[in-house]
Every structure is written in C-alpha cells, then in structure tokens.
Image (tube, rainbow, N blue to C red; front, side):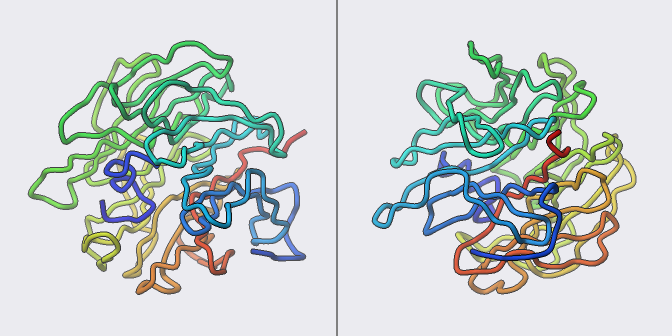
Length: 319
C-alpha cells in the first residue's frame, strides 16, 4: 500500500542503537529494529534508553525476514511476534518470555501467519493469515487448530487484529485493493472472538489499537491528504487519529506531511508511541516517537542507521 512497513506491503509481499541513562526500567516498549531488511525484536525504556535485543541478530550476509511485530500479553510477562523464513514466503506466530527466553512457535504449516494480538486472559492469540486460507484467525497459545474468524478472497485482505481489553471484540483492518477512492482503501471492522457480529466501524481507518480502558481507539488514516510518500509507489501519507470505541468523535492528532503509523498506547492511556519518517521523509528514515494522547509534546526516542518500527508498549509492569 502506501507504507513501506504498513499493511498493503505485507499483503503484496505475503511476508513479511544505543542509549543510556534516564527513563524507568520498569516501563518498557518492545519494537522491531530493521537491519538491512532483517527484523530484530528489542526492548527499550520510553525515552529510548536501556535497550536490549531479544531475538537473533541480523546475519552479516543474509537479507532475511527475521522477527517482527511484537505484541505483549496483558500481564506483561510474554511477547508474541512474527518469525519469518528466509524465502519470505512463510512466517509463524511465536511466543517468548519478556526476557527473550523460551521461544516457541504457536502456528504451523505453510503460508504467512503474522501480526499477533493476545486475548486479555493470555490463552489465545488473534493473527492475520495468508495462504490457502486468508483472513483473521484465533489460536490457543497452548496449541491446537486455529479458528478462522473472517473469510475473504480476491482483492480484499484482513490484517492487523487488535483484541479489546474487555475480550468482547477484535478490531481489524480490511483492505480493499481496488477502489476509486484512495482513502477508502481501508476500513476498521469489529468481530466477536467467535467470528460473529461482523460490522464496519471506521471507513478510511486502519491499524487500530485499543486504549487500556477500552474506551478509545487510536488508528491511522490518509483521508485528509496531508502529504505524499513515494516509497514503493506514490500514495498518501497517513496521520494518527483517535476516536471513541464506537467510532464516534474522531480527532486528528498528527499534522505533518510525513508518514505516521503503528500507534500504541502507554499503560496509563496518557501517551501514544508511533512510527514516523518525519525526520527524513526523502529517505524514509522511520523512527519511533512519543506524544501525549492529545497529540501534544511529540518527541523522537530512537535514531540511527537502522529503522525502528512497530512499537508495543508493555501494558502492565511485571510483578
């Protein structure tokens, strides 16, 4: 689609630093570090300090998928992530402890399984599925066959599931590849965890994340046409929005011509971390930024040669 690390690129490909001092080591953001195309899962404090790599380092001679899209369990003790094969045609949802230990695969078989989101009780994971079967699926962390929640085909793709804090809904992005109205290429939908009650929530929105209290959604949209990115193809840059959980009262939070994406809430709901190329839109140097939930006080927390993407704020401190 329009974003090099966003939703349509995932669809078309079917695949898928330093710092010292400051910050509270108990408050943690997981993120993906893109090293020449290879993904590494890292941890850091919300000010960018106290960095720790959890997954394998990028090979010196291999351009491979690696580990991407970290997602915290509700108790903050485990991370789910996507582990991609070198051929770019296969990936699986894996889980690991918060320190990177006990890594294991949850999904199996062929195709691409990616973008995990934990159920609040930590027993199941929703994810996007590509291959012979496409759509949003749910699988038990302990193993077993996945349950398919959405069934789509043709030029429609379901991606980026996000489980609500009350466990009653899963938000996801439905992408319509062929449409004459660019900003309507995406829409946020809701479904129950058993696959019933499907309904459209926000037209022109995608990449949704629930606030910790479940009362709001932060998401991305290109509907205001504020800027254009020409990475992969010339399309509109996205901005960050927030709305009530029922889709009402949308409010735009970012106002640059850069590409802003991948929003995630702080545990107290007062801050939002997101990804942007605003520091260097020409070369698309994607870094992670933090702002207040009202869009104020934007500041960058990563910088370096490698992209920093896909932030996931740990929901609660580990007790």
